[in-house]
Image (cartoon, rainbow, N blue to C red; front, side):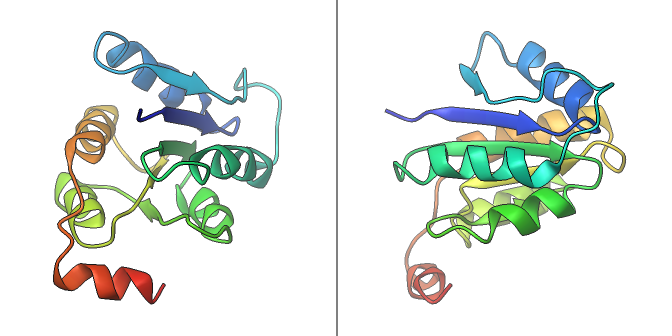
Amino acid sequence: MKKLFISSDHAGFILKEEIKKKFKRKYSFIDLGTDNSKTSVNYPDYAHKLCKKVSKNSKNIGILVCGSGMGMSMAANRHKKIRAAVCYSVKNTKLSRLHNNANIITLGSRLTKKNIAFKCVDVFVKTKFEGGRHKKRVKKI
């Protein structure tokens, strides 16, 4: 069974909460924190926590939100079995799943409009890995 984990730092907290609210009837999220936007936290702590959960099952998917999406992506991609993609458009989100078999989407709350972030999350969850010629490339990562 696919599990959908979500986490953020303080900069991404509001967008994380809006994503959960927007998709509460469509998806079930396991929220790994943080729990407010006022207390500064270290994004790698939340990325590592989520990656440990996602890497336990190949069907698991993660959503990480920070100010730019970049820091979370860098921290996440240090883990085996993790392919985190910074997503900022529907097209790059879809390709990250189709061609790269990304299992974590990272979003930048300061750089991505809310409606685009919503579209990216929906496309990320719905899109399946294409396999084929892309499989051997992903294995080299």
